[in-house]
Image (cartoon, rainbow, N blue to C red; front, side, top):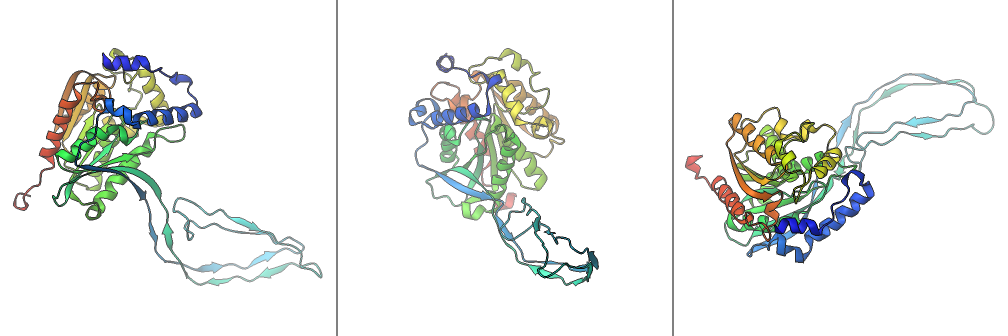
Length: 396
């Protein structure tokens, strides 16, 4: 009842007519609201004994090594008389100070007539160009903001939980301070929440998927600096963030990064042409926290090829980390969560499905309004404690 009252107090935008500029305005206003101190009465207060702060991480940075460019034979060539000797310097794929994804464009250098007379046709002799060394240099990357939750305990290297907030085209890690901080305090663990790029007209959901994996890979590779145990790692996402987490789990399997667990809360797992065909989509078309028009708007911006970023349609669901799939039943995407749990089980991946009757989409970020949020928190923490416990060396 309280969630429906909250929805009634907020005007639903016309998603079908929303322009890019209106979306940006909406994103900024919505995220300010979600980050406001007063909102904690609804979204919950962080756990005590947990340090919470922002960290900026540059991804893709590194050094290009010095490298030898092979020489080659340059043929003789004829330059006609009286002609302006314009010529082009070709670009290079890796120039000093240029990122690998950029290309230096070719440029033309004007020629002209040499004073004192015309130039006759002449042959410019060729020759052999020796190989030469090209100096490397730093390659700048892109920066991602992370919200880090670190318990104030003396316990050596802690487990790592990579968290991804929900929202898709809106949202911020701050809206999940309640659950993220309590996971950090009660496991205990270091929780790293990714403030990924939001979906917009120029930013597909694949950008968030890439950033989720890149952050996970970076932190695990640099585990000592982060104070985490690379052998005890889990991913945890909500809504569209659950899709990002599930995709990270799939890639971790492919890349040989051993995850202990994945927690997927009210997950969106299907962005293909079948996304709206589930019975729960028809039953909860106008649910309090997520409507089908919102999903249509999100899908239109988020994907060009939905199958590539739909965990449900991954080619292989074997050998994945054990999953906890949390499904609120009054949710348009409830059946997507159920379908993914079934798909994992059919492939032999352990998957536990837990449903919360009557809870709406996004309920885990609404402990001040939805009573099921606290039992769900306890279930998630219990699952992660079991999967991330330290295993004695003789039992590995």
